[in-house]
Image (cartoon, rainbow, N blue to C red; front, side, top):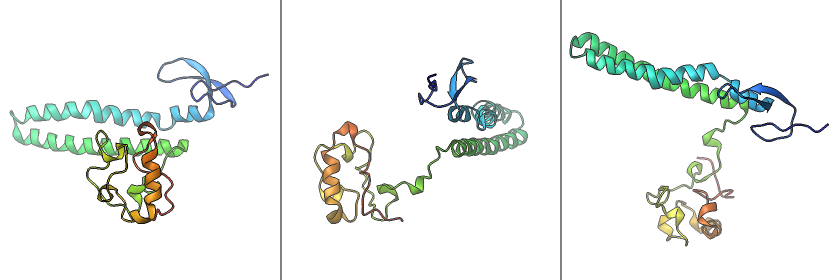
Length: 181
C-alpha cells in the first residue's frame, strides 16, 4: 500500500482525513499541517476581528460622540485607542505562539546576515527594494557597500554582484566575517 501525500505540503507522511476550517473541504492532511490550522486559531481570529473591525468602528463612533458630549466621547476615544493597541499586540503575540508551536518561528536577531552583523554600515541607497544599489549589475563603489570591513569581504561582495538580479537576496549569505552586535 502506497503512503498518501499531504494535500497541503505534499510530503509523504502519515496522513488523516481533515476538514479545512476555512474551506470546509476534507483532504488527507499530515500532523504538521493540522497543527498550523489549529494552533491558537480562536485567539488569533478573535483579536483579528476585534482589532480590524470592532474597535475601529468603536473609535469612529467615539469621534462622533465628541460633538455631542466631549467628555464621554473623549474618554471612549482614548479607551478605544488603548484597546486597539492591546488587541494588535495580542494578535501578534498569538501569531508568534502559533509559529513557535509549529516550529516555524525564527528569532530575527539570530539570522546571520548583514543587518545583524557588527560590521554593518548603513547605506541609504543600498537596500531600497525598487531601485536600491543591491540590484546593480556591477559592484558599486566602496562607500556604497554596507560593510565596514570591505577589504576583507571584497570577494564575497564580488560573488554577490555576479549573481543574477532575480536570484540575489538583499544582502549576501554566509559571510565568514559575520560577528554578533
